[in-house]
Length: 444
Image (tube, rainbow, N blue to C red; front, side):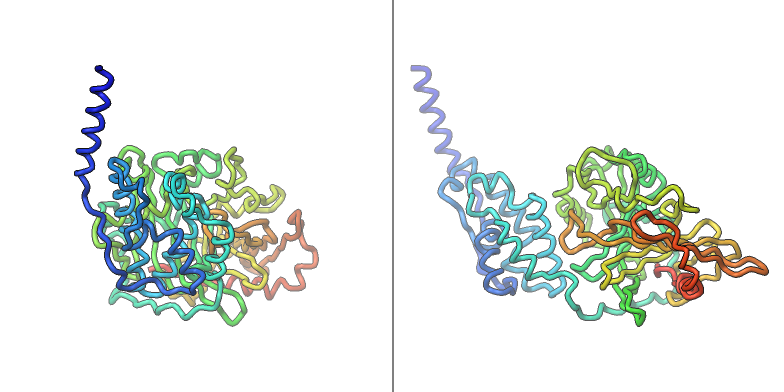
């Protein structure tokens, strides 16, 4: 009898709960994303259940309390990405949004596993993913980037306004050391990812699971600028983004403080502090790597797969210098050879580098200063479709600036073992002039 009463009571309560049914609005699409029919069909069949104004619920989704969870997921999904309204935004925003969506799928974050468990038709097949990637076609010819608009007077980095979530600007970021670099074909940018001493040392020792408190990253982006020499150089500055690790202070945002400052006037990003939701959502697929997309260049070995980049850091100890611990000056990409090159400078060289001077001006390096141009083959970034990162080192070129009564000294190390190239002196003068003539990547 008691069991029967409990069953009846449970049925009554469940029936009563069905009356607590806040709505899931179903509205007409007023500006759908524009895409070829095959792409649109994939989006409609795999994504529209949550990411559109349409209201698509299976019969079992209608039952409370499952309905409450479905409603929360749908409204959250629409807030981040709504294909019914995305067409109202610019072409660049639409393209960037699709790249993020593809990466969410590629890394297994979307569709939500709990959703596909009950809605198997929403699973994105490898063929679907290949179709979306072919449509996006990173590194395809693009229109010229918008020109940078310089502020009326030079920006003082010590006076930059904090982000709208209270995160302060890091005025010393340009002196941080290289964690990695990316060639972004999805938006035609080149990027440095720099780290403060805490982050750089953590990368070199492999203590990055999780990254220690106090780690700070600066991700600096420039428009790609093809030059007459056939190489792509860092063009106009776009933005700098910061990630600051403080597990206690930022426990509600994956342990990281987030910030972005855009343009030559370094204006804080976003309409209000809620912009952080964009950051945490975008980084959700790599929470297993402490929300960090970047694979650090390091010789330290970490048991997890694809969280560090050992091959790119494999410079032999026999080199006369180890430039990966130096500061960076600029970067360039050879699109035909699929290679990335970074110019490093020792402490003496960096005294002449002022990245906020004219981007066309080459520094006047002091006698005895040493520069190193490291060139890597590229590989696809496993964490981001549309990006390429350094892979195997192809060459390291050193230039020691001339001292009184002597010429600048040029040395080149190349091949699989990065052995010294004895014949390099035949091109020494030309390569020395090229390396010394590279201007720093411009900062505000």
